[in-house]
Structures are given as structure tokens and as C-alpha cells.
Image (cartoon, rainbow, N blue to C red; front, side, top):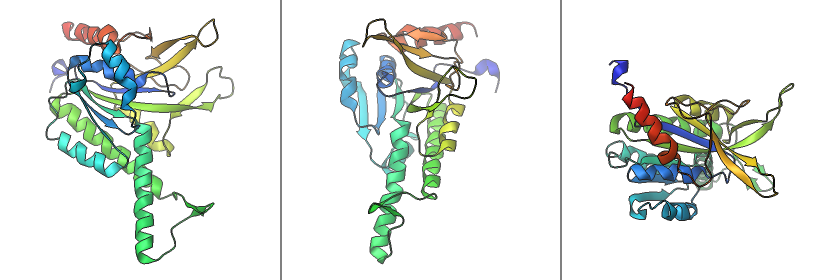
Length: 263
């Protein structure tokens, strides 16, 4: 293969930020390129109805399934690995955070089920509630690794965009830093740290406070701000103030077109 053969029209994207910053809405904007399939781990698809109608997106082109465990999602990924070409608007995981929770919940249910069948004691209890033990987090890491590998194969073979949505939380400030550090929310730190590594675009979402209380501007950034890792491989602006604007139409497609013109 030659570098001159590389195309940028099927990106592998991570949209990350605190809850409520319109990450799912901007993932939806890629439906302007064609049908989408959503792994709805957050189970709140109703939240994108208003922007879909505002942008004139045909709701019948958005397919999704709600998931509450990893096994069902893994089976769907295997199916998509054979047949995903029609999803030219992308395959979306909403969100990686709740996907990791689903994997942990699955291991806990299996463990409780097996102990009931055997009559054994059901692992560690806190306040009478069975909780995950350290080895369960290896299952979470395994599920995340498997998901990323399968999505990367789908992205490469079927030439469809993949969009991951992830929540972050503040980890405080390091000595001498004025910026606040954040990391992707999963139970284990190592799996979360690996996720951005395979993504061609990592976009961090923020809200700029307004002058008037309760007002503000929604922004997306593509360069590091402290430990808020971000990057772009297609020349997106360092900062994009979006509010009701479409990420795909306003910034992403023009950037990809420019990249293809310069090849």
C-alpha cells in the first residue's frame, strides 16, 4: 500500500465531554451522509428527535437497538462485520461509558447466577449488595478491547465512519497547572486511556460560560487543553463554536473535501 492511497472520508471519531454538551446531537449530524446504526447503551434516543427534525434528517434512516449487556452488542458487532456498508452516516456507540457499565453488570449477573445454582456465597457484599471484585474489571477491559478491534475492522473493511461517544469527569488540577484535568469515565483507567489511541479524530466538548447567568456557547476543540486530549488529522479548526450548527455539514465535510482535493 502507498500513503497516496489513503482516504479520509471514513473517519474513526471520538466525541468526548461532560454530559449534556450535545455530543450525541453532533454524532447525529453525520446522518446527512446516509443511514446510521446506533448502539444505544445510554438508552435515550428520544433526546436527538428535535435536532433530527430541525436538520431535516429522515428519521427512518436512523436504526438503533437499546443494550443493557455486552453480549448482545458483541453479537450485533459480529453481524455488522459481515454487512455494514449501507451505514454511510456512521456506526455510533452511545456511549462507551455505559457500554463499560453494561459489561461489568453482565459479569456480576453471571457470577450471581452461578453462585445461586451452586449454593455458594455470592462474592463480595457491601450493605447486602453484591459488588464487582477486582477480576471483574478485566472483563470490562476485555469487552472494550474487543469492541474497539471489531469497530476498527468494520471501519477499515466496509469503509463506513465510526463514532464513539464518551463521558468525562474532572480529576482535579496538577501542581502548577491552571487547567482542569479530565479523563474518560470507565471503571478501569487503563481501558479508557487506550480508546483515543485508535481514533483519527478526537474532539473534546466544552461550554463557554456567558455574560448572563445560565447562558453560554457550546464549543468543540481539537487540540490539547491540559490533559483534555484532542486531535484532528483532517485540519479541523482548533475551536468550533457550534450551538445549533451541524459538525458534519459546517466543518467535517468541507475539511474532508479539502484533504481529498490536495491528494
